[in-house]
Length: 261
Image (tube, rainbow, N blue to C red):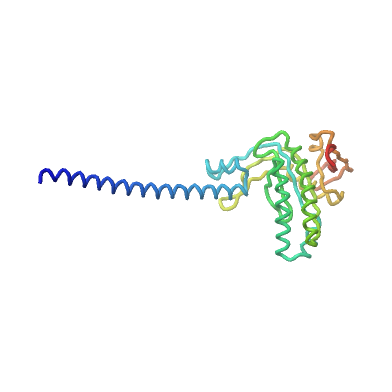
C-alpha cells in the first residue's frame, strides 16, 4: 500500500497539471480571440474615422482622446460645385441622382487624393478640399492646381460613361485660393470634423462662385498664380469685387500645362 500511494499521488498530480494546462490553453484561446476581435474593431473604427479626418488626426485622437488643438497653417483651399445642378436634379429620379453623384464624388476625390489633397467635406453637390494640411507642404498651391487639372480630365471620362447611358454630362466650377487658416477638429462629442477656418476659406468659396460669371471651369487667385511656374497656361481675367472683400480680386483661369495637351 505504501508503494502504491506515491504512484497514485503522482498520477493525480499529472492529471491535475493536465487539467490546469487544458484550462489555461482554453483561457489563452479565449483571450486571443477577444484580442483579435478588439483589434478588428479598432481597425474598423480607424477605417471609419479615416472617412472624416486625415490619418495623422485619427491617430492623435486614438492616443489622446477627442480634443485636438488648433494649428495655424498656410494651406490651399479648393471649392468645387456642379453647374446647373438644380435643373439636373429635376430631370432625374432620386435613386439615379444619388448614383450619379456618388460616381462623380468618387472620381473627383480620387484626383484630389492623388495630388496630396484631402476632401474636408461634401456640401450638397459640391465639396471642399484642402492641400497642405494636416502635414505641412510647401507645394500645396501647385498640388491644388494639378488636382484641378486631373479633375477636369476625370470628369471628361466620367461624362463619357454618363452619355453612354443617355444621361446628361456634368459641368463643374473649381475655385482655389491659399492663405493662413486655423486647422483642427471642430464639433462636439456626437459630431466632429477636421476642417479649417479663416478668411482664406471664404475667399476660395467666393472665387468658385465666379466660375459661372466668367464661364470657366477653373479659377485661381493671384496668390495661387504667383506660386505656379511659367509652363502653366493661365489667362488673367478682369478684376472683380466679391462679397466680403474691399479690394477687387484679380483672378486667373487655368487652361493647361505646356507639356500636356
